[in-house]
Length: 284
Image (cartoon, rainbow, N blue to C red; front, top):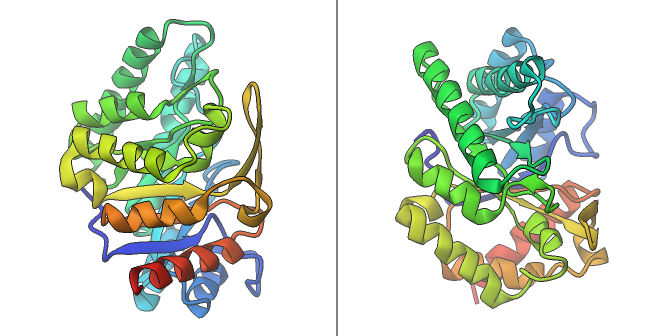
C-alpha cells in the first residue's frame, strides 16, 4: 500500500483556476495558499510531464505539505479487441504510474473499460488479466503507487462499485477503488444520493477491504447532470441535486481517511466548501 493518509484531505482535480499560471508547480503553490491539502495531476489528454519536472514537483509538494494523486488518460479501454489499442491502454496506465511515482503521487486512477455488449464477467476477467500485467511490470520497475480503477457514470462502462471492489479484493494491498460518488449517482439515474446510501457504499468497501479500505480512500466529488443513459456532464455542487452535506456526514461517521478530489467546474471553490463543511460538522 502506497498511501497512508494524515486524515481526510481536500483539493482540486488539476491546477486551480486562481493559480498564477497554468502549470503544475503554480497549481501546487496555489493549493497550499488556499489551505487545501491535495491536488490531482490531470494526465487525461496524455502523459506529457517529463521526469525532470516530475522530480521538481515532488520536491515542491513535499516542501509545501501537499499530497498528489493522478488521473490517467481517458483513452483507455482494457476490453478493446484491437491489440494495438489494448497495448496503448496498458502503456498509458503504466506511464501515468511511472510519472506519478516520480512526482510523489500516492494513487493513480483510470476508467478501465467499456462492456461493448460483452458479458460483464468476461470484461471483468479481461480487466483482471490486464491489471496482473500492469502490477507485474511496476513491481519489476520498483514503482510503488496505488492502482485504482474508478467507478464510472454510465451503464455502458465497466466500473460498478462491486466490480471495482471485487478486483481490489483479488489484488489486496495493490489495487483499490477510486470512488466517484457523482458517477454512482448518475449511473443509478438519481439514486445513491442519500445518507443511508452513502453509508451503505462505505460499509461495502469495509466488507471487502476492512478498515484499510476506509483509511486509504481516493474519492471524486462533483455535481452531475444525468439522464436515462447515465452521466452527461459535471456541475458545481450547489447547482446540482448532489446531497453533498449528507455525504460529508457519512465520511465523518465512518471515520474515513484519504483524498477527496473536487471535479466540479469551479474546482477549488467546491474543494474549499467541502473542507469547511467537513471541519464544521466534525467540531459540532
